[in-house]
Length: 153
Image (tube, rainbow, N blue to C red; front, side, top):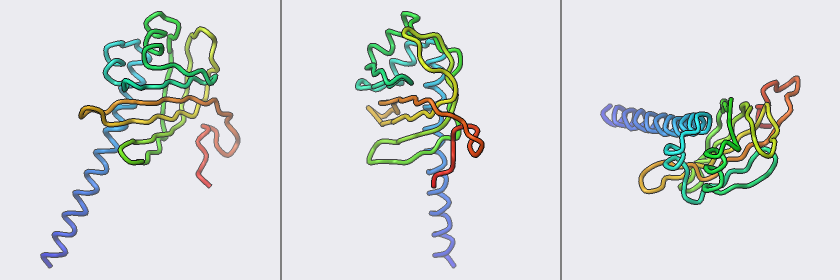
């Protein structure tokens, strides 16, 4: 009986740890989207890993310095950025997230707007979570997946 109680307790602790890990990742995504929308440069400096890459919806790649500079110079002004229905998996020390959402903003050069598939990679760097990669891919809604987030086959 004691063994069963101990096993149940360990299982409950593992579930709580998994839930808190997923919540931490979701918080990092929320902090990222908020910082991008508000143009919060100090937050972006902290949230983005030194080797961050931003792959825009048109395929253009920017490193951390140039991505932050484009926000600072108002070459990228984001009115709306949502990421929902996030799926998460771990690969080594990195967490890969993908979800669907919406992007609308003013950019130089102009970027596709609307429904997107977002992919983020989050790593632990000096004891804090940082985004090391973000990619946005335009998707087209279809009758079986109106939000662009179809079931995995």
